[in-house]
Length: 77
Image (cartoon, rainbow, N blue to C red; front, side, top):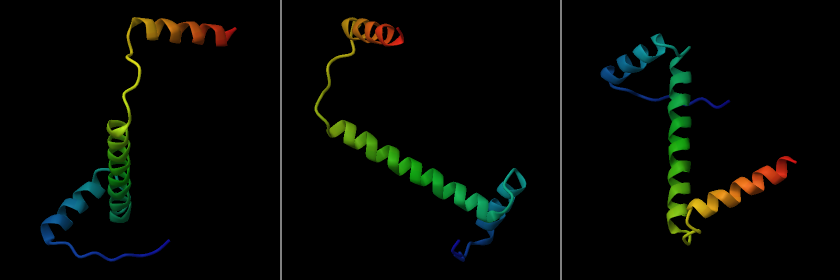
């Protein structure tokens, strides 16, 4: 694992220290968790933008769900 040093103003360091007291083992664990959440948020944004740019799909109306139920039932058998 690589090491990275960061500089924080006292106010932010105090905030990180409080978060560690509330359930993180170390400040490194807290920062790793923040980075993972940021990665997840960026990935979700990419997926949403890709979905918005994709062509429209068939409407999810009563006929769609009836067909979906029928397929699910036939696959269970």
